[in-house]
Every structure is written in structure tokens, then in C-alpha cells.
Length: 316
Ligand SMILES: NC(=O)c1ccc[n+]([C@@H]2O[C@H](COP(=O)([O-])OP(=O)(O)OC[C@H]3O[C@@H](n4cnc5c(N)ncnc54)[C@H](O)[C@@H]3O)[C@@H](O)[C@H]2O)c1
Image (cartoon, rainbow, N blue to C red; front, side, top):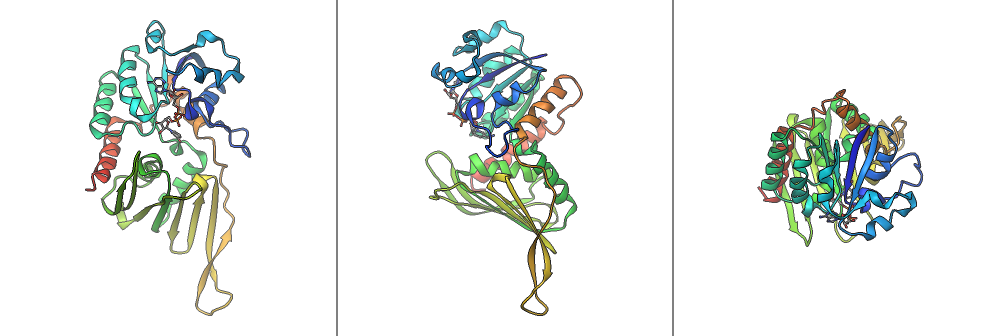
């Protein structure tokens, strides 16, 4: 069994509810961890004692909860999960270094500043502590299937639309794109707004083989936007609602005009969206059991990602 601590018992740490139509899937760290007998929760940490009451449905012993990180010092810990607000990640990670976990899973984005990102990544590398920043679509089965399809296709263009801020939402998609197509060759800012908490940025990013991805921000909508379309010569894939819905459309002869072709819905067999957190912990256990090196989560690629995001935020 591996000892686990969760720091931050808010929405993503412990409270986000399960997707109603997909009850088998877990959408927060606590729920996902409880699914695995290999993982042993040794402390739940939150600076606000009320957060423990909010999860009293689990009937945990009061001893499990603390609001004081210093209490962790006497424990042997294998895995630390950090799901506190982004502004606190740097300080908390620094405080966790001496606890010598083998793995830290930190919520995205790592910090809001490239200098902080790089210093954390270096510190963890020196201490030989593995870091996963939880862009959980890398772990989702349907995104992994999509990746296999995408790297085989000759894609013409991709259009991604998002709301709720560039750092908060668009970085999820950029992380996924990099996992599919590698490094960005260049990017061009189309529109740039700094809002109170985040950014609304329209940007075109270009990958190898002239693949262009248009990333477009939306504001002032009373609904959530995280959707993209992938166009190739003879078909199009549409991903809607953050990945929950996926449509495949294929070329067919137009029923109205000769020499014209239209797109028509076609069948594609994909996993349901929603197993990202579960797969994250399955791989974490494999790592702790020395069966998986989590090689794609390496300091070089993590620094690259943070430099890329930073250069977009600096309008370069
Ligand atoms: N991967 C995803 O899809 C996803 C989704 C939502 C949020 N997030 C990220 O998760 C993080 C948390 O977001 P949230 O929506 O769960 O926030 P939240 O406000 O719901 O929860 C944060 C919790 O951390 C506690 N906290 C704050 N500072 C602390 C400290 N210094 N020590 C201990 N506890 C502390 C708060 O009391 C609160 O209970 C953010 O970085 C956010 O960007 C990721």
C-alpha cells in the first residue's frame, strides 16, 4: 500500500460531483483515490476546517483531517496530491519537498509564472521527486484514442473554442495538442485581453507539417465552451462539451448539387469521457510499483510547456 495525502479539499480535490450519466467515473481526486486498494489515505489537509464537514458523507475519522501542513512531518508519504488554488502551489510544493514523496500530482496550472514553474521543476528534479501536472485529458481513454487517430491523419486545420480563461481552459487543449504533435513551431496572437483572473486570447499555433490550430476565446456566455473541430480532406471530427460528446462526419455526394460534396454523420466507436482521474491514479500506482516510469512527465517537456504558455501570455 502507498501512503497518500491530499492537500486542498475543494471542488477538484474532493467535491466535484460524478458525471451523472457516467456514474462509474470519478471526477475528483478523493473519489478516484478511494477506488484503489493500493492507495492508503493518511491525511487530508485543508486550511479551512469547514471543508472537512463538506465531505462528511465519507464518515472519515476526524484524525485524518488537519489544517496544518507541519503535521505531515512525522508521516511516511509516497504520493502528495495538491489541489489548492493555483496561487498557493509554489509555497505548498516547497513545503512538501522535505517530506520526500516519490510523486507529486499538482493541479493545473502549476503556477502563474514561468520563473516559478521552472524553479519548482528544478527543485523537484534535484530531489528526484516525480511531478505530474494534472492536465487530465492526457489520461482520458477517449482523448488517447483520439490522439491515435490524429497522428495518423493528414489534418488540414483544427479550430478550438474555449471560455473561462486561457490559463484555466485553453492550456488543457494545448497540452493535449503537444502530446499529439510535439513542439509548436510558431504562434501568432490574434487578440489578447487580460481579464481580472486570467486571459482571453485568440491565437494561431502552428505545428510541424504546417498544421495550424486556431484557438478562439469566448466571453460573456451563460454556458461552458470547450470544443474543437478537426478537419481533414475527407472528414471532420467534432468534440463538444469538453470531450463528453464526439461526432465523426464523412464526405458524401451532395444530394442537391452535382459535383458538390457535403459532410454526413458517420459512426465512430470511442470510449466514454470521464475516466481521466481514475487512469491518472492507475498509472501513479504503476509508477510507485516501478512498472511505469511516467516518462512523458519529464522536466524538459514540463519546462518547454511552461515557456510556451509564458511566451503566449507575454504576447510574443
Ligand atoms: N484538472 C481540472 O480539470 C481542474 C478542474 C478544476 C480546477 N482545477 C485546478 O485545481 C485547483 C483547485 O481548484 P478548485 O476549483 O478545486 O478550488 P476550490 O477553491 O474549490 O478548492 C481549493 C481548496 O483548497 C483550500 N486551500 C486554499 N489554500 C490552501 C492552503 N494554503 N493550504 C491548504 N488548503 C488550502 C481551500 O480551503 C479549498 O478547500 C486550481 O489550481 C485549479 O486550476 C483543475
